[in-house]
Length: 567
Ligand code: ANZ
Image (cartoon, rainbow, N blue to C red; front, side, top):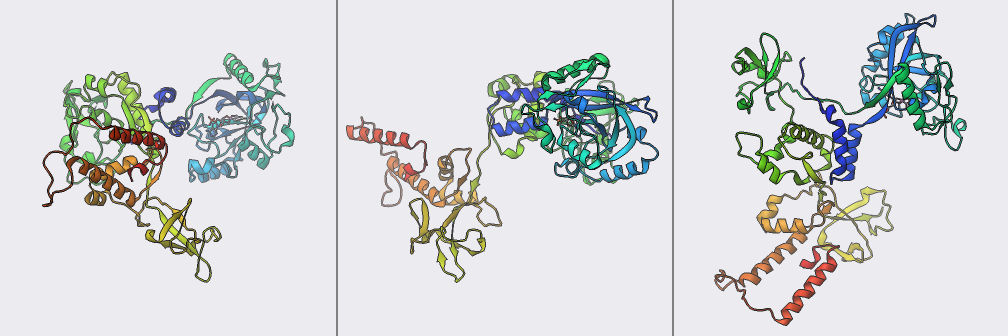
């Protein structure tokens, strides 16, 4: 099936570097860094050997982040989906390998790379030459190596990689120590030493490589330099980030604005004047059953001509994924009625970039990365003037449900205080209505028996707990101003906070009082005096004193609960 991919990997470095200048939660930036997963290392070439030990014309290229450990590579692993595998398997081993590959194909990448999972594999029957020390080392196929990362093959260094170590113990492969930690304790540890240190057992005058005594970093550089000179490998940067599969076979979603010429099959973008391309109305947008997208049913829409050359063409029938629109909607907010272009340049320069973006951490690596990518593409073609779309991102705290009070009962059914109860037994907890509760110091206790300390907890709002507060109900009862003001006074935007209906009542009363201060009390018929009751006179000294006392008090409380001063 023909698919569209967006080449986000071409922006990997910029997406990584530009994170530094952003005012975003550090945790979100770190998630993006890990998702992009930049890793620096080398690709090294290992020649396969025939049964007489002669070099064959088959090269296995491995990706390693530790070229300094090359003298410790005692076997190679190719992923079960490696394209050269069939060339490597000996007749004796072919049945074993086939069965193993079949088994691996049923596992997910996650299952395969889980650290705790037992490392398994099958010998291919073939050997390769370690280019550094000239030794023949066995080639295995094992599913802890993924076909989709690096080159799909590794040089395994059991002494210095814990996965390889475990594997080598299982299958009796030699373990050669080549990095010495500074405390010289390697051989007694009973596990791989994966840190950096000083290189040992790593010299071969025959190929002109000696890295003994160097630090891991120096050795890695020297091995890469040697490999590049001798044609055994080269420096390589890899990313975990994959290109973005950008085609969907469903009706909804933005149509992709390109046509395919009938005669040459060439893909041609629509002229800008033909944009936006609108989805055609379809009565039946169910799947076609043939793998062709449902849009192929819109025959008269699909059949078209290339506007420039007039040649007959078919429109692309795949649609964009749901993430497409969220990559650029904020730009349209700056200029929503513009029918000529995405956004007017002057308006974009005035409004952009978005000053504060409030959103949940669930968007950390998808939406927020995709939007940054689109923005950079738009920057490169001169549509936007900033390199980044969202200068500041804030993950707002959740509003938890109202605090619930609970008391424990002992086996005889008597209420007992929380400080002596068996807190592991949640079944003995009983909900206590708020009116029966009072505060005592830092705790909550039963009004009728203050010796019984209660547990106070707030839970995430959910239908199953029955603690959902519907803002419509609050607005109906207290008005939108009360709701807004209450939310602003609940506490810092980034913190989780508990909802409190008595809190909103406080705000409601405060607003009422403010109102009456300005317009006065209601008249006997329930209406209010026209205009305000405020007067344009100098404040008395008493009034000024009260005002400044209030400001001073407010300053003191600025760090604490902001609601208190209202009551
Ligand atoms: C030899 C070696 C020695 C390695 C050592 C590590 C420690 P990152 O940082 O994630 O890029 N590797 C390479 N390709 C792989 C694949 N397709 N599937 C599974 N593992 C793969 O990790 C790079 C390291 O992961 C590489 O460096 C390779 O093992 C392994 F003491 O090579 B290393």
